[in-house]
Image (spheres, rainbow, N blue to C red):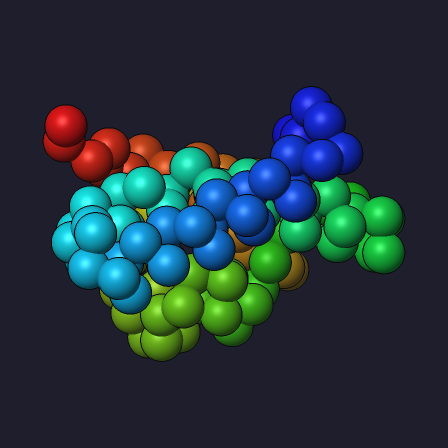
Length: 119
């Protein structure tokens, strides 16, 4: 969550500054990417807040179908079904409703694979 309403503007200025330094060859590509990550995370948080304001029911709908979950994960539905059959991903299977995915558990599953950049 953003602590300051100016934090989004500051992140945007930071991104502009880093891109300018990269264009002027004052920083390399890898260094520029590493410098951009915190500002980009701030902007993503800002857009998530905006989405919640625009669509307050967005977080209320927590169960996704195979097709919806595959779109959310940016993978093919067949790839998702393979992960389910190998029990590599959290899912819900109930008689009468089929296979469903809890969006919060999918988000946590994705984050478990997050690798922090080395310093």
